[in-house]
Image 1 (cartoon, protein in one colour):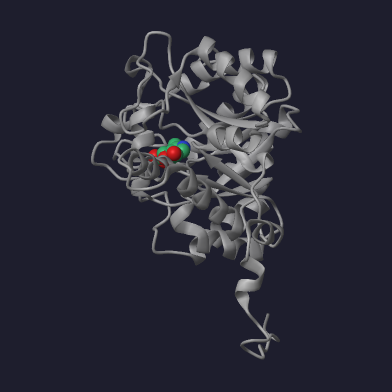
Image 2 (image 1 turned 30 degrees about the vertical axis):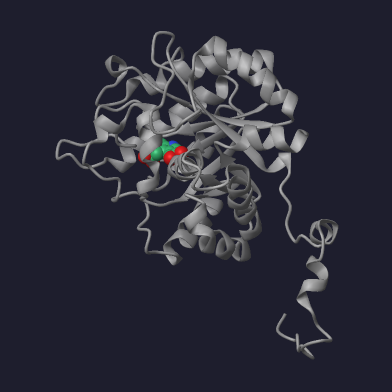
Length: 334
Ligand code: PBG
């Protein structure tokens, strides 16, 4: 790049390589494939409400519905899903005991899913926010502060429990310090040597998680409280790289940047600095912005979705979590 000296016009006409669709296709520098896409799903108890106001056309599935849905997904060629539970209020507690219940929503779903779809890669969030009264990702001490070291012990147990029920990839999304190391140690000790760790290593304290919190039912729990003592300040880049490199040292097989669209500089910087796969999460708020603007005919839906995903790919992501994944797979199959 540095040695490029253009003789200028007309020896160089950039438009020659853009003259028609085939030219543009063969010279595309990055391409999106089915292998890049992870489809996230929200799970619910039988009698809970499927509809999520802030995320049109994204639903919460009960155990039977998710099995039917996964038939479609597998036929489309999607190889990986991520599952998130909406835990009923009465099962939430200060110490998030439900997270360790071998019969909780995630564990039951894992057993059913892996029984029917043994090869589908199932990724589970490791964080306590679905299960705590506070809506925080960790357990609070008597002063109302997150107890980091107590929390990570619980997360390690949660990871072992999910792995024992068939989870292929545990994904700590809590941003506590030291959790990757303690999870890896716990998995090894329990002979879960093939369970991968996808660390949400650079998870920013973002406003764009808001529809997700509605989906999960943790919005009212978290209230006006913020996750800013553990999630990264969106003004920071070096800190995001440091957190990711530390997680790789602690044993993360895959690292993640989240959100994706506004954080492409972080993805591309990390790509230059590490050689493990990088995942990016196009989060709920990114989904809803495109979805709702398209419903109002402000944006062209398909073109905007594809642009948003291609740009994430171009920045250096190997794997993209996106609520558009299924629909994009349908377009790719046509
Ligand atoms: C929970 C978690 C969050 C997301 C994934 N895991 C929300 C949060 O940290 O509050 C956000 C995903 C999305 O917005 O789509 N730790």
